[in-house]
Length: 142
Image 1 (tube, rainbow, N blue to C red):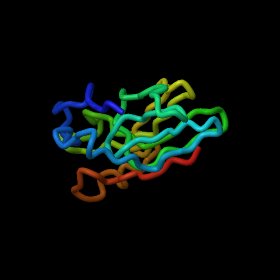
Image 2: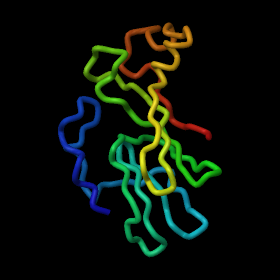
Image 3: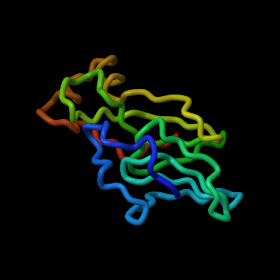
């Protein structure tokens, strides 16, 4: 699939030095009606392959993790990280975000879940205890 590229040692959260094509594990793949496959890995780009295994697109503008779900308009939603975080000074703070990618693989929305909670008066959920991973989103249902 060719996963090298943007992913280097710039992240304080994700250990990209452990990445290798031979060790890559696709998580929560979505089989589409046309036979194509949309998937990410743990802390990885979102990828769409054709039914023949050719890359259709790769969205590496965000670090996806856990599951990805399709929406009725042909787009995809998944949890990502915003780095560096705007809500914490910890280098390793996992600022989970709601992320929407359109059917062509273009990043169209990325919103910090912590910022949403803080804006609506729930900062205690984000800062309830000393943790660099207070929300740990695994799934977004469109």
